[in-house]
Structure formats: structure tokens, C-alpha cells
Amino acid sequence: MDLEGVKPEILLVGSNFRTCSLDVLERLVSNLTPDKVVQALGMVCDDFSLSILSTCNRFEVYLVSDKMAALRRRIEALFTEVGVSNGQFYKMEGREAIKHLIKVACGLDSLAPGEPQILQQVRDAKFHGIGRYSQISKELFIRSYNAARRIRMAVGIDDSINIGTLAVQFLKAKLDATRPVLVVGAGKIGRAVIEGLARSGFEEVFVATRTPSMVPQHVKRLVKSVEGLESIREILGRVDGVIVATSSKGYVIDEGVLDGVSDGKRLVMIDLSVPRNIDPRLSTNYSAELYNIDDLKSITSAPRLSNGNVDVDEMLEEEAERLFAWLRAISAADIIKSLRARAEMLRQRELSKALRLLAGSQESDIRVLEALSKSIVNKLLHEPTVRLRRLAASEHGELYVKLARELFGIGEPSN
Image 1 (cartoon, rainbow, N blue to C red):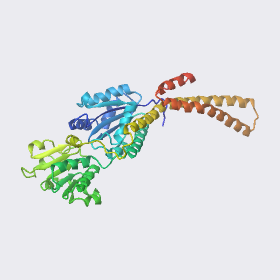
Image 2 (image 1 turned 90 degrees about the horizontal axis):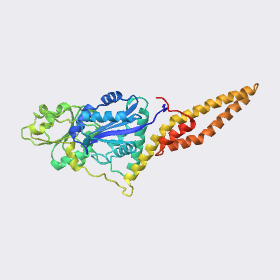
Image 3 (image 1 turned 90 degrees about the vertical axis):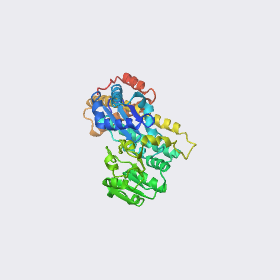
Image 4 (image 1 turned 135 degrees about the vertical axis):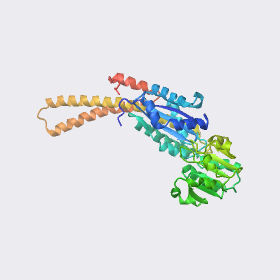
């Protein structure tokens, strides 16, 4: 990775279940796709990397670049243009943004506190952009993932809670476990719903999914049947509860599907998808009781920790500071590279002069002089480069890098 001239900064702009409603999250997910965001930011900056964390309860854009002023204005404008007001999104930079990323990966900022799924999403994040910063962004996320794993293990975060089990808890308050239930979707969240229903005593569970053959056998053993999505209408006539969790961009249950249900039948429906997979108009045009992510906020709670002796916030601060120091130290890479390049040029020039004065020297003598000159240069530069890396990672790192440039006469690199 070419780090010459790289001075990475990090910016986070996002919304979550605490700052906005499902309507706002839907607008962000539908309108701010990675391609659209890259295209918009590319109009004001030619060197940046971004990653979007998009779940059913958050939409966050993480940017890494050295041209944050223009990027900040543009990304904030993008949020505003899709109808997100200032109070509905947050902005963080530097150490604060890194701490937030680690906290998110820990599951400590989730609607389902402690959920393990977000940790995997941080690990598997996709990166987009223009220029040299993608590799730094990837390393930033991997280091944040590892930091979150350390914290989760140290404090004993209960990872049995997820958005699926939260939905089951909500459904159980509305519907007796003896009543039949349909689960639409058999991905990670869908399977979590199915397993949660089984643990909660629901014995009549039906599943509708796009690819029934892909449902694992251990999941099939927990349900009455697994059908294709085309069976939803028929199954709805036999159940009293529905939980939908698919990655579809449109409705999988709309007025046409619900027409197969008898008039007056009570039907409790929970939509976990963003964007929504159940037409919200069904709650007014039919007798369906329709709930979504916003309704689950009423039963969220603090994360359960098995080791109360560990200060979670203190660990977050320490991990964030360590990672922020790594990010700051990257800015010293180009000056160290330049310093060593200059030293090597001087070594070769002085060695050439010496060899001319030692005309007729044996090949073995030349190799000795070559090795001697390299050794002297390396020993002279070792301590300054080690100290420069350490100082560049400190709170006033940028000042030390500037002083080093001035001291050694190394100008700012051209991008």
C-alpha cells in the first residue's frame, strides 16, 4: 500500500433507532446506496473510502480521507436531501467515531442489546470509494472488530439476544403460544425467529422462503412445513401471527396477498425488514394488527453482562485511543520513507566517491564497504524513525511530523 502523503481522518454520519423513525431509515436505505454516495462524493473529492453499516435499526456512513471539509459538507447534504433533519442524524470524528464503531460492533448500541450479528457485519463490511484509502478503511474495521471481540469476552456480553428473539418476545405478549405462526424469510434473522419461537413454546410454526431447499435440516425440524413465497396467501388463512424478515426491497405481503384471509380474522403481523416487507396500509384497510421495528423499541433493555467488575466504557476508551493512535501514526509513513530515500541516495553517492579513491579494490572489499555503509545508515535512522512513529501517534502527532519535515528539509508530498 502506497502511504505517501496519506493523512487519514475518519468521519461518521448516521442515524439509528434512537434518533429517527423507521420512515427515515427507509428513506436512507432506499436512496443512499453505495454507488449513489460514491458518485456524489466523487464530485467533491478524488481520494476517499467509505463503508455503510445498514441494519434494521441503523444507517451509518464511515468515511476515511484527508479532505474531510468537502466530504463532510456533501454527506450532510445527502442526508438532508432525502428528508433527514439535523436532529435525526449524528456526526462524529476522530477518536469519538472510532469509539462509536467499536461500541456498535460490541452490540452495545443495538435495539437488541448485545446482538452478535452486528459484530459479523463489521467484520464483513464492504468498502467503496476512489483513491488510496480503502486498505486503511479495511484495516480500521478489522481492528475495530478485534477490539470489540476483546471487550465482549472481557465483560461477558450475553449474545443470546437478537432482533429475532426480540420479535418473538413482542409476539408472545400479543398472542398465546398455542396459536399458529408464519415466519417469512429463513436467513439469519428468520432462523433466529424460528429458534426463538421453538424456545417460547410455539409448536405450530410455518415457514415461507424464497429458496426452501436452502433451509438447514435442524431448522426444518422445528417447524410444521417450509414452503415457497407463493404459498404465503394460503398459509395466512391458517395462522394468527406473522413475523417477516427478508432482504426483499418490496412488499411480500400486500393487499392482494391478504385478500385470501377471512374478514374479521385477527392477525398479528410483525415486520422486521428495512425497507418494509408488509404494506403498512394493511393496518387500516384490514383487521391486521401491524407492528414494525419502531414498536420493538418499547421492550428493548440494557445489555446483560456476566462480568460486572469490568468498566465497559473504560475499555471502549482504551481501545479507541489505541486505534486512533495507529491512525495518526500512518501520517508519519511518508516522511520516514522520504528520510530513508534521502539517506540511501547520500550513501550511494559517498560510497561511489570512496570506491573511486580505492581504485583496484577487490570485489570482497567493495562488498564490505557496501555492507558497512548500509549498516551505518540503518543504525543512524533506527532510533529517529521509531521515535517519530511513536510521536506521530500521540495527541500532538501532526505537530511532530511538521517539525520533522522542517528539521530534515523534507517538503509536503504532492498527491
